[in-house]
Structure formats: C-alpha cells, structure tokens
Length: 242
Ligand code: F6R
Image 1: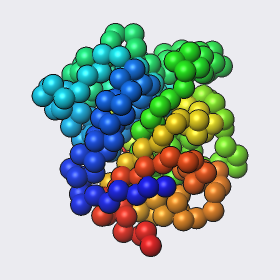
Image 2 (image 1 turned 90 degrees about the vertical axis):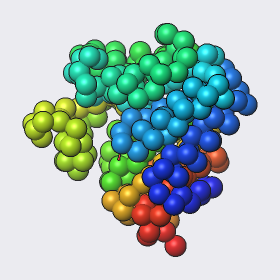
Image 3 (image 1 turned 135 degrees about the vertical axis):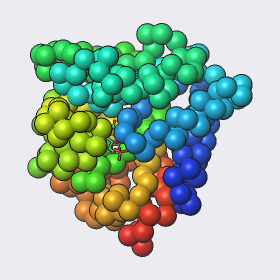
C-alpha cells in the first residue's frame, strides 16, 4: 500500500485527482472504476477543472461505477446514476454510452447482477478503481460479513450504512434497504486501486483495514493483498494510523 498523506479534504481531493489524471493521460482509453458518496466529490470537481483548462481528455475513457441502490429510479436525485451525472459525467467529454452503473431499476436481482458482470467483462476489466470507505470498513456496498462476495451481488444495507446515508434523504425510512454492488473479486482484479478517506469518522476503519487482520468483517482489509493500492487520506482520517 502506498500512502499519500493529505493536509485536509482539498489536499486529498487534489492528490486523488492527480492520480486519476495520470491514469487518463498514460492510457487515454482506460477503464475507470468510480465511486459515489461525499468523499470523491472534491476529486471530481478537480478533474472537471483540469478538463475545462484543456489538460484532460475523457473522450476515450470508459467508466464503471461500484454500486447503485436497488429500486431507485435514475431521475431520483438520490440515485447514484443522478449523482454521477451531476458531479462528473455532465461536465466532461465522456462519450455517451461509455459510462456504466448497475441498473437499480431492474427488479430481478439475478439479472441486474449478471448483466453488470457482463458489462465489466466486456470492457475488459478496470485499470483504476476509485474507492471510498464506510465507517464499518465497507467498500462499494460490500458490507461486513462472514465471507467475501466475489462478483456483482444484491446486498442488504447494514444499520450503520443506513444511518450514515440518511443524511442525503428526508427521512431515514426513505433510505433504500438494498443495493447492487460490484464484488470483492472484481475490485481486487482492478489493476490499481485508489482509496480516498477524509475525516475522523474514517480513522478506525482505515486503521482496521490496513493494520488489522484480513477478514470479511472489515471488507476493505482485503486490499492488503492487492499489489497496487494507493491510499490518499487527510490528517483526521489518518489519526489512528501508526
Ligand atoms: C459509494 C460507495 C461507498 C462509499 C462509502 C463512503 O459508491 O460505494 O462504499 O464510498 O460509503 O461514503 P462517503 O464518501 O459518503 O463517506
């Protein structure tokens, strides 16, 4: 694991955007695995800024997102489809039809998951996977469990994740209870993984993931076995690191 210490959220965002830019510049037709949530918003803003300056070109890039709420219409402002469009896709020159997310509108979980596995296979795997981390160590929606789930699957969100995500909804009851997520094997097969973390509430999860035992009870701990992991975290998130 290569650790980049950032002073604060802005610094984390810029450092993470630098790594993504390097990937896009070195391999213009790369496949980027993308994440939603609060943490990568600043990274996406920075990428948009560099795109607007003419320093970045996404015209050959393909993107695959980690996850989507099950049963969520795309036009709902809480869908990850909507999030990606408003925070990145609508502002850069990604080609239409080259950005993929699991289909949250597909009620048949088996179909939604096997379709998404096929998409990831078709695009040839992921060059760089961007990840946030949950307070419970989840990556994507791979929640703490007694085994690692390999490919795209449907998950029941844990109370801790529902609690963390309720800030985006009017009432806690509105938070979807299920999601489709890329599995651990798919994430581990990415050539490079970039994990971003900001804030004190991520400190324990970061410590457990990189200094604790590798266990499905802390899903991100599996990244200890990945050969090319870049962690960009701010001082607060690193406060429990040795
Ligand atoms: C988002 C995702 C989640 C988040 C994690 C952290 O696509 O898969 O694993 O990365 O919940 O979320 P934030 O960044 O909001 O703290």
